[in-house]
Amino acid sequence: MTSSRNSGFQRKTGKKTRQGPNSSASDSGPRKKAYGMRSHGATSKPRSPKSRGNDDSPRSDQKPRRSGAGREGGAGWIWGTHAALAALSNPRRTIHEVLITEGARGRIQLPQGSPTPKVVIPSALSKILGSDTAHQGIAVKAAPLEWPSLEMLAESDFEETNGNGLILVLDQITDPHNVGAMLRLASAFGVTALVMQTRKSPPLSGALAKVAVGCLETVPVCQETNISNAIQSLQRIGWIVTGLAGETNLTLSQALSGGGRQVIVMGAEGPGLRDRVRKNCDQLAKIPMMSQDVPGQAESLNVATAAGIALYEARRG
Image (tube, rainbow, N blue to C red; front, side, top):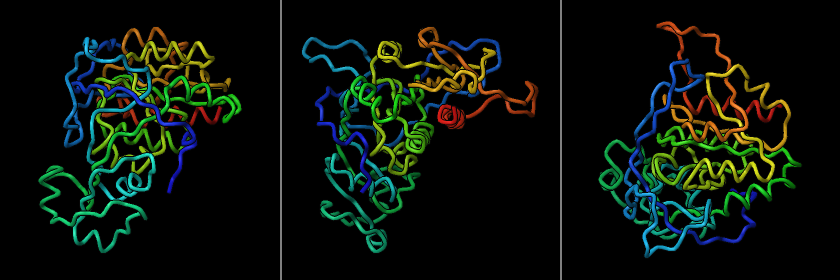
């Protein structure tokens, strides 16, 4: 069983957040981006049955949501061997149902204490998850994870990292495959928290969980209503915020060379960082690229690839 370094925190009750359409605001300029060619609109299947609209204003019958805490949507399906076993091994997960095929039951050993699985034929899983889903014969329906607030994680991180913490912020990145890949990177480089917006972000289940191959269970994910406000909160307690952008002369290695408590902000492919998020960063930095802005050469980097380079530079510095 994999345990998180934040597992000592008590569970916090947060308000269910809303899931909006997969669209991105556009504020790209004419200059060449350091990464990103276009914004992806894919989402995992199936979507949370309790997901709601994209209206950002609270209704009068709702209690205010504590910033950064709580969870995403309702129960969701997690599939694939690694992702499903990680969820079943996580004592912080509430498991509603386990479906497994006869073939998978012969090769997959479920963790001790797992709910009794329901044996189904492969087509039954495909009907639930989608015919193009690589479920590997197992699917788990689980309640969303709850994490402490971003402020709690950011403040507690100081002692654990000797003042060299690292937080990754995603500004309206909607592709679950990219977010899942960045969860793996966050685990590999010891990121304190991955921060996403409550809207215009993929569900924390499905395709994202499969790509993350279990890292969704151990990397704290904080969902914030307003990314700019979250950045400002981190700055007030001593974190240095660096946004990735191509239209600057400052390189990542220069920006992160001082060490300390670093926040790296990634914008959506194509649009990049939104204007207000950009303005709230302490500095903007780029990944130097040797390719030219001509047909046949790399115009930009995939956002997950760029995140991997940025996190490596932060740890190297």
